[in-house]
Length: 295
Image (tube, rainbow, N blue to C red; front, side):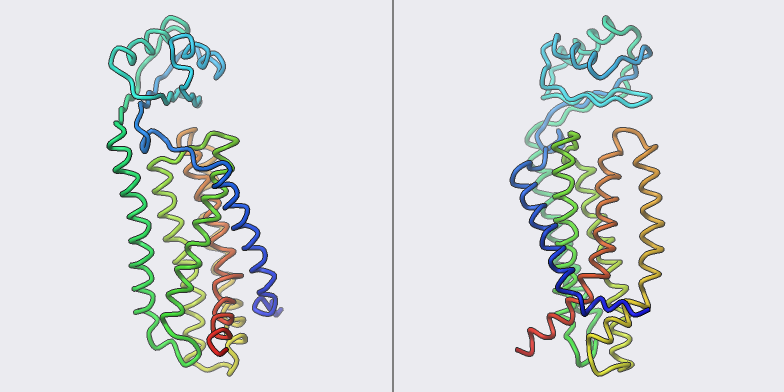
């Protein structure tokens, strides 16, 4: 069955434009909630035998002077995120838990100053920017001699645009989830973003590389037909790979615990968006770029 994805590319562009607009509005309206990795603060993880509820924990923290604390409860432990704590405040929280709920075991305590947080923020954005530049340069080199239809520089530009598209929509969706579920931007967020970046490129290059091979074989004199054939030839591979990765991430999201849930969710969104853009955006955009180049 012929899919004619290139023929209907304007419709897919509209879908992407709507998703990007929603992501932009989410980032402007909700923003990303910085975690203590970026703002500075304290992270305390404890195990409490009596298994208190989220509300009980929040009330106990408020009574001890920490209304701002964010509590996450999992089956085995309780995570408390607060502003930077002195050692005395740290011990007071543990004592208040012990008094209110009984035996409390401290599992982890990390404190990060705001100076370190600012440095992490700069490093994170620099890492993402440097990755995009290096990837664009490598794709341009790897796709040299792609044929007479389109230059390697256009393919590199398209790959970078696709990657920004995928990351932007994923981060916008994460901002919405952060507003409703309290997901934070921390080092795990940066790791997930870089992973999405790599996955997006890998998935997109598969289709583009097949397009390059078909261009060299000159299976058609029309670029649109070559791209359609290339998409059909790689579609099963793209879907199988994405479903396998998606199921593995879904297992992490469902059973990995509270701390890994935001990380897994961002990757789930990124895999879905990356697969969609590889098939419906990146390859058809080759045709659009070529048409623009001839005007």
